[in-house]
Image (spheres, rainbow, N blue to C red):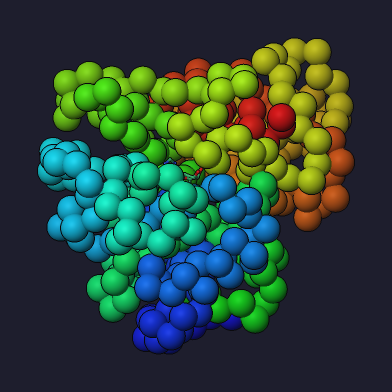
Length: 309
Ligand code: TXA
Ligand code: MG
């Protein structure tokens, strides 16, 4: 159900949960002031309690208030905020409910760029927002996705389609350097000129606890079984997720992400396509993985590996 900006602010300021647009994906928002509403987010999503939430704020000065250590965020903030960057930082734990941090000594922060999210944050103060999807399923990039997961009467601040369509990139400050603990809409190379180095991407090592708890779980997955193909040359028939500027055998049913020449467009379509193959009742789908997995397409590939795992 569509609600206005004022209605969204009133609901959040009285301890309710609302879906909110961001430039990455839609979030399921609750005010940081209402632990009960934050608990409801975990329940609604079916989210494991050891998977912490990102705190969204309007301005960087709000973040400094919570920090335990003297970390200067200004260089990164000046370039990448508002935008699809999230920073996991050591915090004064008594200032942030443990339910938000899943008991970690750190909390993750982001300043979203979507104009409606910005306006809302000015009316509500800090909001915790995981992606607005049932746990494990593809994220939501338009209102209908949220209605599918949470019902047509769920309150949604409708901001249209999400521009990026992939979640924010999460960085953690460790041993004096920034590391990427979740790939996202910003690629490692995007940080080079600001940091003076390309941050390492921390992949999960089997048996080790991941630095980003969410990486432990199956994610972004449709009901259909995805079969990733490094080459489509032996493909003769079947349902395929692929590219509109590439040709596939005539017996194949193609769900096109967009032309390979437009990586940003492909990224923004991913979750809508993963949801569409379920709506169409597909049970098994081939995915054309024969593309250069750099920049935003490295994140797209990572999401597909996770969705197929
Ligand atoms: O683009 C985004 O980041 C979206 C929009 C709504 O802002 N949000 C999002 O939230 O993707 P969620 O909950 O779906 O994913 C947040 C990830 C999880 O994998 C969680 O484990 C990780 O952030 N995270 C949260 N707090 C953390 C912390 N203190 N240390 C490490 N990872 C953390
Ligand atoms: Mg998520």
